[in-house]
Image (cartoon, rainbow, N blue to C red):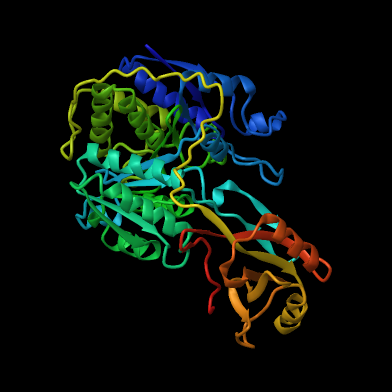
Length: 484
């Protein structure tokens, strides 16, 4: 017996979790469950991360968390417990598989277009760091972190998963045409990893074009890997292609801890009525069983689910409205009664079990993931983000007084668009500028040099933020302003 942690969640969470665990019990799945305290009610007790210390310790000792949907209290300044859990335990890859389910009618199922798309979303970085500041009373800043080691983790996982799945194609969705440094790094790592998997067709597509193609020809895609925010949006888009979030399983994969969960809402309006659809959580449970090597139990129960759906059994949120719906318990019982039966469409193969005990890690310090620096770093300038309600020319005149012998003022931009030394009078301004100073003749600078410039400039302006301009070899590690 393998013991896992279970958090039932909020709203409909306890009902659908009980339904799924009852199905597992009826199938003699060899799992033991230790319930842990997580969710909105834990926030309400004063635990700011949405889980008790005992819950955190249990999950870290067991290595597997099976969780229902959870709500984050609104207006209390606390972070989402779902995001916190993924980031705390570095579950860097979010895997969500979207497949045609016969008995769940969609535009594509009616058109006879089969869907089998797996979205792998980076789960730790990007804007989901939630690092935000007000630079002025009008200007908010969110920092977006994309790292080479973080990108390598999720992209390596995506290629390995695609290989094991027998996929033919893996696609990187990105916005590197605009975000050339951050998305550019993610795309660069993608093609570095692709060289190790010549058997897979690796290509890339700009994310807005990807969305259009997914809603017109989703059958053309197999595995798609994306950064965090883009992956969040695209994965929900794909859920809409197969019937909604009620049919979208989710697995969060890390080296030490894995989380399997339903990503739909808590549906408080129907909580306690025993009418919720447990399918998404059950599908997530299949992913967990296979992760633990319980291939035959996963296939047997999934075939029963598929047979049940094909038979027209449905909860109130989907299915043939001319046929009476069943409640949560009735849906679970129908699946149990269909154990041993095979669906007419795409029955799951009964693969051999590969029993795996989740390795429990006793770490003494935080793992540091870092790539080798190939060339030395040189500071060649600085971006000073200043607050000002003056016109660009007036800002430039004041800044030029402070350049000294080391710096030249190269450009001033507003919301990323250059407004000095050239620009357009039709560019609307806000009260925050980015002022770029570079060293004369690209001479190396020190942080002390930057600090001296900062001290001179602060005589005339409030400096809201700074960013060093670095170079590695002959490669500039910073972007140009729009129009520069």
